[in-house]
Length: 268
Length: 268
Image 1 (cartoon, rainbow over the protein chains, first blue to last red):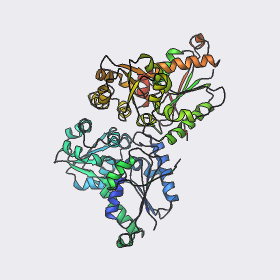
Image 2: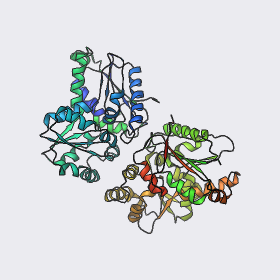
Image 3: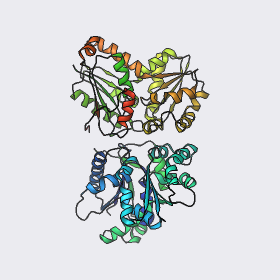
Image 4: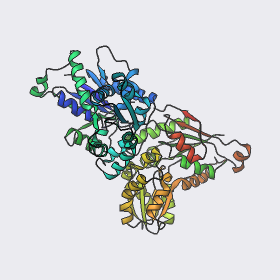
């Protein structure tokens, strides 16, 4: 059974894989983490687009039936420049995340993301297309990804960094906070404490899984939902472009399975 | 006049360029920052060696007369696997840094570096070859590079992170601290405050410049020291593999020249 291809610059996209597995347990997944070239969030649109194209070529070459770009930076910068073969669905994470935020916001949305995603203005544009009444404030948080990779998920230093990054958003009185990078859900407990109960955190992973489920059905590519579960056919295969040192530990935490096997692949 | 080629994963290697310009003002320099693939410090030896080889091929293709690997991670992981054309000198930064530390230590040396450099054990091995009596304690500091890139050089958050990283070294009662990553000299004021005046900070940049000066003379490749200065012929040319967003700002601070022109090159 052809898998769904999912890629991210690193380990963060596995939060989308976890959501896909909950929503579509029958579907197999082939994941590519471009760990040799991460992070994407500080790089230029041209470079991110080039890397994204090569990663998708790799997944398509491995026979996936659809592609999910589970990386906000790549979705923001590269999605519009990509042209896949007809009949091969392709989804990013920005539009689903923006939809989820637009559905719950009372008017003021904060977006935290990488430098490149913020500079692209992709979230504010998507949010205003959906709800022109929304006021949107964005903030780049370049230290969040390294803090997640260091494993300081619920930590005093992380809290200090987050307080500084979030201060202008809280001053702008946001009611909804979009976690615009797939690493950020791992910081949810720190972020929730700082923004308080009046601010809703939006993690696009669940929204993406829903969009993928509907899209596969529309394209006639969905498996009957019992198939994978009963036949035990649904597989999950993880590829990385470098043997990332912390990848396996964080991957295990996200997917609830320690010692996941990784295939090391070269994508140039 | 053929330049000296210098490369680093990013902007940190310019601390070595600044030292080379002070020590060898007549020499031209061609710098390559592999910003599209940074950081190296969390990557595997195989990947770092591959990237290092390609970067050196790029510099050699541009006609340099000698190569300096101004990146501790690449020096630690790749230097021994490289084979340059006969007559083309190649230096890393580990050996000169270890020599400088061995010359001043009273017996207990701390080394801070990237994860990959620490795992390679290159500094402890080099230090013990020079002085078997030395006791060496190492600590990986993966957040220092992102903190430098965020521009939080002399900052309260950086101090908290540094206190945590340095605690085991201070407990081990070190008298000398090797800054084993070319980014770290930018954190010197924070680090000096935390370790106190009894600990000597060793930044390998000056030591590398001295080794290069001697090596060029021995190889008959040195320019007469008046030539560049009087003829105004010494040039400095910076290439990057991605238009790093913070590169220019940090580069300007290190080299004391804002708005340095950058050439964007592709190295695959």
